[in-house]
Image 1 (cartoon, rainbow, N blue to C red):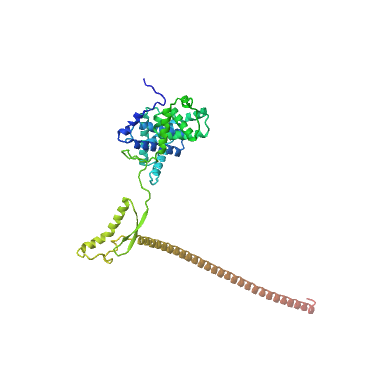
Image 2 (spheres, helix red, strand yellow):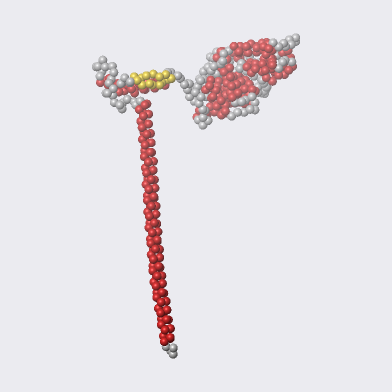
Length: 437
């Protein structure tokens, strides 16, 4: 028959001293440093992911419980911390996507280890490996804990204890801070939550010099003992004396969240390289790193190729120190950066001149077409003027003809009238002389 209880994962001091990490050769200081480092990762990632404090507290407790059964040399601190945050967000009903968790841990690693901050591509091979490893690590966590992941925190007891003791309100915040710091130590796997809550209340009261009832002792009401309270205070005092935890690489394989571990930008110095003709060229190379040495060696090799040929031909001349620049071919030496830039500028000027010629030709063609159009218009105007003159001439001629006919008709009419009058007068005369007729 299997019995399952809530919050039954507690170990003794002897079991903690005989942990799997100690069996693999890790000393106490290294194990403590790695535990604090992993809890710092959980706390900082929870803040960046905007998770409640309960999620971060649950993740830290899961982290300590896992490394009580597994060694730091076989499981990476960074990967386990990321899996603890992801699993705790589900347990506390504040889930976050695996993509967001991986991006946050990638960013924290770049900032903590002074690496160049680079973007984690979600479609890259590195991201797919990190995601599969996150899911695999979550299965390891659930398997080692027997799928019993319930955690009882001391925070929920602090408010009740202080309200019962009638402590001032400023004592509550200090007790909460101490409870959060206690999660970086192994107190969560050594004592129950009630004992840890009494210990942080006692430490906060001593710091603010607030008297608590001692007759009878107040911790007996809350099912705690004096030895447990003193051990909690001692562990917290030792925690505050330790420096900031740094990562110690004890894991065998690569556990980085970044694809390339690049060093930050190094200071750059300018040194001069002597060319064969006696001139100097300023070369900018970094002072540290293997890449800078390789680049400088390549440049020296390129410059020494033509010199080596000449030295082989003149081996017997020991006094010859410098090779004349006239014997060197221009093609053998690498062109300096200035000549390349000048050639590029010349090519650009040629392209610009070609474009200007094209524009000028286009403008001339436009002008020619416009001139032709203007000549055509002038010819049309001249033709119109000629036609108008012809029409005027025709009209003048027609007028002249009409005036000639009218004069002739007038002349004929006057003749007819005179002849009529003359004939009429003759007949009258005839009638006068011949009355009988």
